[in-house]
Image 1 (tube, rainbow, N blue to C red):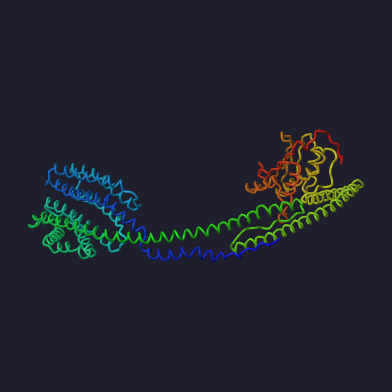
Image 2 (cartoon, rainbow, N blue to C red; image 1 turned 180 degrees about the vertical axis):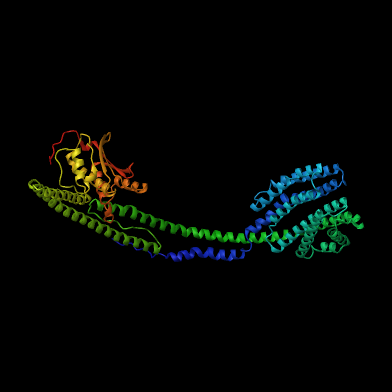
Length: 634
């Protein structure tokens, strides 16, 4: 037969290099350029328009109407404005608030921080009706009224802080400066309300002077900080206003109120305070509109430029990613097919081939051949792995065969030694039986009985080795054995038989073929009960007839076992495991499980009411006989 020639496979390292070269080169080159132009910046720029439309513009209108309502309310409390004018202004404020809430409900994808500030603003707006009731009833202090309106407006400025999404640092500073100028304008409006209140009362109290001093100082600080970041072209109008007489007059008003003593009356120049503050407010409002428009004019080109760069980088990156993806899919298909075949072959080796071999060896089969793995692979490393698996398989097969031979040899050694010991012990029991009949001295007879009991226990241990080797003990009965003799025989094979109490069992018998194994099984359980219970406590062995057959309970008064360990022992009794030489301390458990499985006997351990363990042994009806048995009918 002509041998088929195959081409040498390509190394997997070369395939991986080719697989990763295109995406690495393209992604490193393209995304290094676009690292500073993240998609998040573009999305934030696109989101600015929605935020301005749905939140900033409507809330700014609310602030304007609240500022006017605050001023009108101050005039009303000072009896300088009619109630009808206040009602009209409140109507305009309510219209602005309703428009703001309607537009805010349309805004989607609100950040958690923005949601918190928006909720705070709505809560402040909900306080307006209560504030108005206090104004109408004239039960609210003017200072408290001004402060409450100011809290509502402050909530809107906190929301503005979360709306500054410009990624460019220069534009961010510019937008922050515009927001600070808006806060300065709000503080100017508060000062106007305070001036109205001062003019109405004709004096400057301590609380008025402290609040006005705080307002004026904050306004000047915000005004100065904002001008440092506006930059050329936007700060000209504000700097001209700062140098204008109307601004200097208002600064003089601030200084006059801040330095006015409570006991002193207002100066003669106070008659012009209101008109001077109104003129400055009008100029500031005009400058604020111009600087906001200037900010919009600067943001739009920057946003367009960033979006164009992101689009170009994204388009080129998309082409590179598509090329990388197609190439990766091609090599991925080949590698996945080969590796999947290798995985299936290895799984079959572990779960089917080796498992079947071990099962055959346990059953004594002589066939231990296992077919080698065959896999059609083009990759050198995959082929090497297949060869390595075949080598491992051969080694595993040899180890399994050697282990089976060793286990079989140990079994034969056990059986051989146990058979010899069993024969010698049986002869020894016959000699002891004869000596017991001839003995006349009581002490000698007692010693002979002890030797007889000790020899009986040794014979049971020899039979345990035979049972663990899957062989049957040589001794047995031809006829059925009464249950009482079975229980007594089991107790007699235990060292501390004097601690065991056996009440009269039901009048039934165990078939002769199973009597030896039942005696051995019960002896192992009784001995276990005596070993794991206090020396002076008794062990009860009870038997009663149940629908399932004959139930025999071996109950001790020891410390018991944890539930987890008890479940583990019951599982081993239900399904006999293979005998493990490493678990020689569980020898009795292995013997009981083997004997129970051989005759279909149910054995289960459960907690005893006395704190120990109760071993429940259920002999099926097939092992029982109602025929009377003759004693000694072996």
